[in-house]
Amino acid sequence: MARVLKEKYGITTRPLHDRPSTIFKPLDSDERSAFLSRLVETAQYAKDLSKGPKSPWRLLVSPTSWTADEDFTVLLDALVSYSSLVTSKTQLPKILAIITGKGPFKEHYLSKIRALNQDKKLLNVVILTAWLTPEDYALLLGSADLGVSLHTSSSGVDLPMKVVDMFGAGLPVVGWCKFEAWPELVKEGVNGRGFQNTEELLHLLVDLFAEREADLPNLKKGALKESSYRWDDEWDGVAGKLFKLVK
Image (cartoon, rainbow, N blue to C red; front, side, top):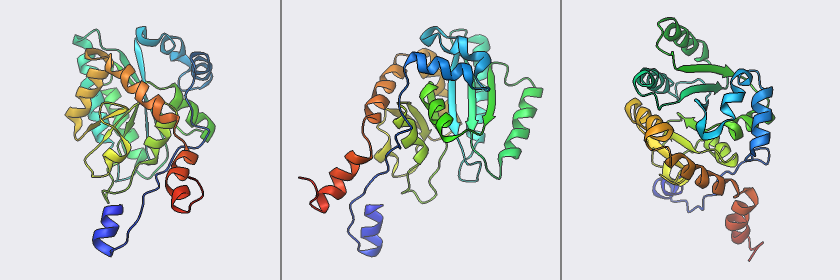
């Protein structure tokens, strides 16, 4: 955005990036198990999800506004293909995918999900939707194994706050990366991975959940490191120095 303002309007700026609020934080294993057991959407899977790397399930979370800015078909198609692969690749865990948020296209995609279930194309994947309090949303991010961002950034210079929140909870991210500002937020292979189509997302899910599963803990470490960097750090490092409030 700083580059665009400079080139188009001659305005010199210094970016001050958003940071997560204090409700987004990593959870320990006891906190995670307690929340998964309490939340209606995860309660029946909580025992399995609490088994760690040996769990037959992985919890995937994708916050969405259900608008045209997020092509949810990319994730649906990847999950259909993933479900088919689980049948032949028994080392792949099943996926519990929870989609949070409200928006105009929600019912459109829910009808697609119902049709996929009726056609038995999601036998190894469970897709649920949820509308949560801010506190429970933060706990859900802290309990998940992987976050998915479908934000496409129509301007190319805005950044998805949902990814900031995921990092606040210490949650590694895979996200749509076909826009210029993506590397400002996600360090490829350190705290997340990017994809540009359904096939790339599918390969990431297979790699991180089975074939190169050691990569997921490494991304987790990167996300946990990112979670320690908060608003005061960003403000002091940019605005604080600019206004000579800090040395």
